[in-house]
Image (cartoon, rainbow, N blue to C red; front, side, top):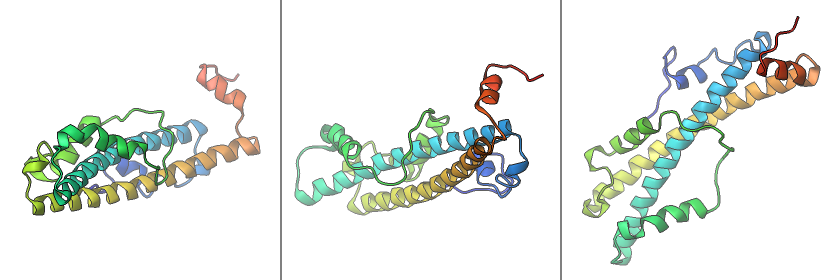
Length: 188
């Protein structure tokens, strides 16, 4: 399970730390943007991990369905359709357009694989019904945990975006200032 460690050095520890949103009104606009971008990267990484877990859940459920219906086709033969069915179905949750790439894709893949030990999901057909059910429970619990942290990170992003928008709305920040900072111009 993912956990947030107060005072920890990981990005999720910072973004969900108790002081991350403290005193936003006193922070310079570039610092607010940096924090928003850091939170957005964490949300992207959590979304990626969540998608990995969803794929594994779909594979396990498909194998359980195959066994209960007496199906003959192997999971490998049906893998593309199993994964596509989830991708084409209705979206649930608070999805957001992702412009960033996951920064820790390999780490997240290893995390998902380690959840049920060495079995991976290379051959779900060889798992007993009990192990398959346990794998599904483990993946579902982890997905719920990841989703919870993702929603918290999205709340942080929303708070930071609201503060940035309020500054533009009040005139404390202007688009000209943003363009100048993006182009490296300094006000004289």
